[in-house]
Image (cartoon, rainbow, N blue to C red; front, side):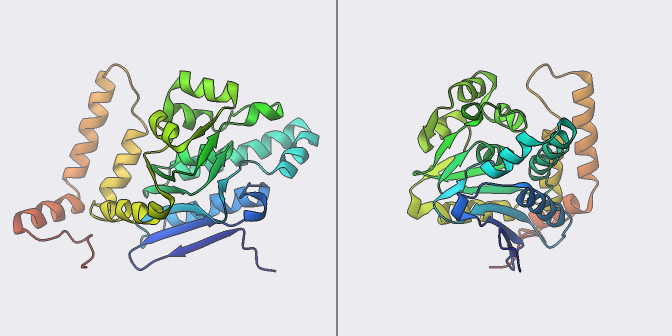
Amino acid sequence: MIDTSLLIEVDPRGIASVTINRPEVLNAFDEDLIGRISSAFESLDTNPAVRMVVLRATGRAFCAGADIGWMQRAAANAFDDNLDDARRFATMMATVARCGKPVIARIQGAAYGGGVGLACASDIAIASNRARFCVSEAKFGILPAVIGPYLINAVGVRQAQRLALTCSVVDAAEALALGIVHQAVDEADLDSAVERCAKELLQAGPVAQASIKRLFGQLHVGPITGEVQELTAQTISTARSGDEARAGFEAFVAKRPPTWVLAE
């Protein structure tokens, strides 16, 4: 039997769609889906034909977080088995966040628990105005440990702690104000908003985009130390001497699109 819990398509422009397809459980993830998401992002990351990934879902929810059956099985496991399971979950989140290609989260409905984590691990999150967000783990006597770093990076420590302690449900407008999402639009405009973002991403050099993600992943708010200065100097000097930069500068001088921009 073919597993359809995760659907993967790549269009001619190199835009990959990774679609969570478990609408009957509000796209909650279990052990199997976690492994499939990790494998999908690892494969797309190394595929030179892929320019970006759009993470989406079917049905009325984006992702309800952990499947309750999975959580019950985990609760019954010994500590070592639980640790292995948690490490696989942490690997999935890191694989999404560290993908060398830009990742857009298309959030059409509810995102709870790990669903909030996926939104925060993506580079750009665009939500429908009917989307709702909740860091819900404490309601089940657990905590948002694995998604915590991504949530904190998105909204800051104080707001992350408030969301985790209260399990408050926030609407798309508040999620936008907090930084969980970058854009909130009417449901009818969601696909066009994602498409506009994708077209903007296609204008930039893919090597430059991968370097941006790699560099920004090493930078933190705080003093700009000598080590940070050296890291940024080394990074830009490497980029300037690369083939993509030469092609970009030549295209600019010649007043033509660079090689990575597809003709309309």
